[in-house]
Length: 198
Image (cartoon, helix red, strand yellow):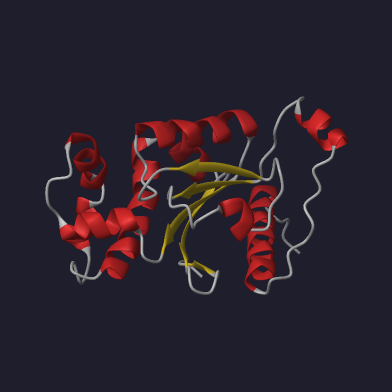
């Protein structure tokens, strides 16, 4: 029997844990996440999150709840439109390089306000225009640029590519099999996370 790749096994375990946590959330069977003084004291020593979640800043999308995770389980990076800009990339690089986190989930979601604003267009001022500009490639490459849902999914797909393209640290870790980047879509109505690559 061929020897199993330990990095691949670890990423599969992490994905399985995320899926199980989300299933508990969907079924309203959340496990009780304990946060007592012993845990708080232990966490002062450091952190070891098993997954990075690049999520939208939308107040309805709370990764720790969606995946029924406790403190020190997820390294959450939130920015409207769940995009890989310089700051979000640097945050993810920190978790990969210094914490050894092996799974990155790019989590788009149903009815994303940032994507909706980008699809509608118009002048939203310099800061918001800059942010929405990151979504423009997803609009241009979507099979139906007028469909917010299609653009959300395309934005997730392009963000996965951008992470490897624009981060040498993460790209090297992916090439070495130490990190896996996974696209996902959160359904607000059901609470289900749909992993887009199977």
